[in-house]
Length: 71
Image 1 (tube, rainbow, N blue to C red):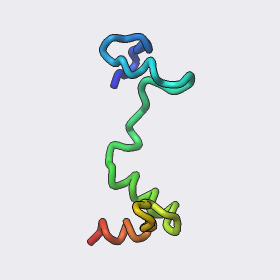
Image 2 (cartoon, rainbow, N blue to C red; image 1 turned 180 degrees about the horizontal axis):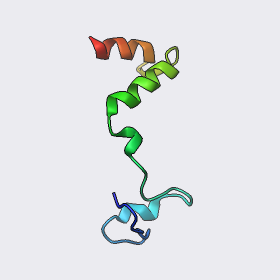
Image 3 (cartoon, rainbow, N blue to C red; image 1 turned 90 degrees about the horizontal axis):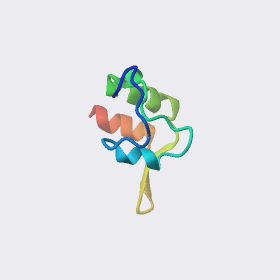
């Protein structure tokens, strides 16, 4: 990440940036995600009843995922 410095989309060091659609930033403030479990916990609570994962016609909810991760 670059804090305060401007990275141009044509930069040789991060060639994938020129594939980003207009309006997508090259860098984000990752501070809210410094503790991955905290972000996951918010998602589990907010989407408890929704499907978190679907594979081969089988799914698990965010609540299922939360319970499995705690186990």
